[in-house]
Image (cartoon, rainbow, N blue to C red; front, side):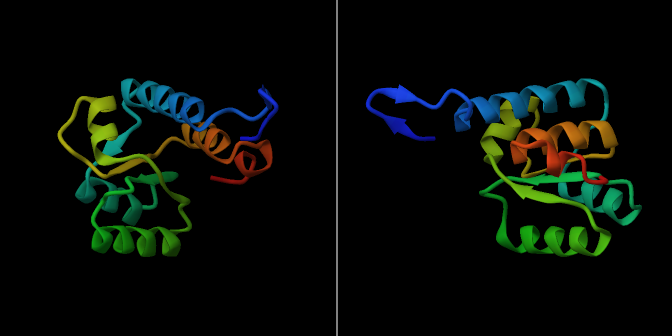
Length: 126
């Protein structure tokens, strides 16, 4: 975001506003039963080719991060690293988890739109 002489670019959302929108959509996704958490269940869904989008926490273990990223690359599933395990557990009232996945195509498109900030990325086949 650019600041110039006390003026703020109103078209570019702040990082916190972006994360708030992302977490709001993820909570809706969770209420709809379309959010999976935890290494075992997510890796199983990726293996079954049911995953549409995977989010990893920044403080997730490096070893597991690399494993999931490799599996997702082989399966063609988009992966993003953002947020922390504490944020994930606070937002979803669960024990500490470092990995979140949605099997729903429409939720994945909405999340991609928020993460990328433009419509071109979100229109890609998920």
